[in-house]
Image (cartoon, rainbow, N blue to C red; front, side):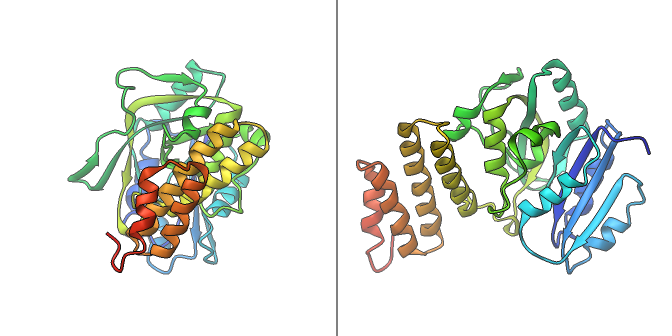
Length: 298
């Protein structure tokens, strides 16, 4: 097989219900010069058998003992890549057939971009669309430029399955941080600081929402990762203290809401208290603190 242009990295664990759709969406891309690197984190269901049912030389399958550390799996995939471009896809998501073709076309149009991503559809099943797009205001036009500050200020959310980046960027920004469990939020923030990107308004990826992918509104791991990221950015002088305090307060509030939904009121109170530490006049956070002392928090 010729050297691939795109390496596609797919971590997986017990995704027998969905991984066939994810693999199929990669192998049926209009752009065919790719390799698919599947990293199985110790699945105990039929995931391995389903992967084996695809007789395609572009698939490379690696099986490991279960760790639950997606960041390490992504780095293992990067270390096995042979291509100039790298794309992530989660094993429960689905690419539209034009996804890679369109993104490579945009790299040709914007050669200074180090990475790019596209709009997505969020769905529960093929008949239940939750959101038909998440990037309002981009309809009808592609965007290119630096999004570092808007990304830090939570104006964009980058789903890993929608992104693509140049492998050479890793030499500049480093690998996914293995101290973080998912790691992609912090990784894309580093990419956004170092490189311009492009955003396609086209919805070329379907993001599947289900209980198994922890896709609740207040995703605790993402909140903790962003708080870690903010501390790093401030210590490196990449963001001003005012922005650090504003966004740290915001993410502690989100963390409090996450714990509140899980009925973990003591932890919620701690997060809301940290929120007002950085933004003393955050009225909603003060109200939430008081509510956590009630016998049944409202």
